[in-house]
Image (cartoon, rainbow, N blue to C red; front, side, top):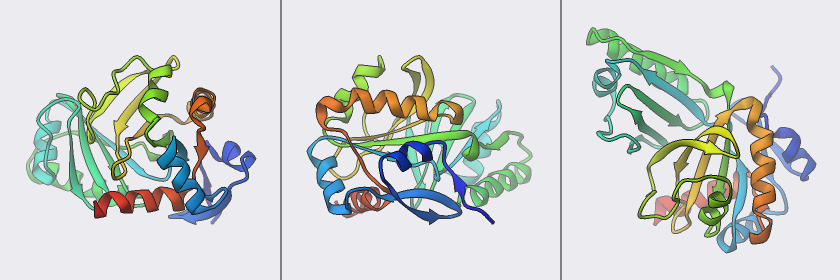
Length: 231
């Protein structure tokens, strides 16, 4: 079976990425070298492709009851909660939740939610949107300033702390923006329609030139995430 390509694959390929397979996805693993990329993110800002992550939405007037039957449910809109190694749930509205999982784990979480809803006699629509979305990752001390150039949200840590999510317009496109720090480094995931992925990637790339934005592969992102887990 052929590996799946992310919508950002052409841009990564043009930048000279070396690719690896991650849970059936062909993903940029390394560009200039893992340590070089990590240092670039620590110094300014790194740009990566996180599209292989699993993504689910849960929506209905009973969505909270379904979620609570299987997972912790964040109480406030925009709040997030960890529900396992690498899996987080975010409340976007009273009747809408978003779940991010490590690559390949979305199906198991979907089945758990559906089973919990059925057992509790609650109804909610649980949709796997993994293949319909692009996910762009920004990590580094300049990530907040960069995003402020292309989006009207306040990205200061006090207004947008780690583990929260906001739906907003970014470069005139609708995106879900999640604060995902890596250790002491501020970081964000930008999630939107697959068809808009390359456009948003290009906009962010252009906006980040003044901070020396550097493409970083999966290996560097994983190393930065491990730094967070050990912090």
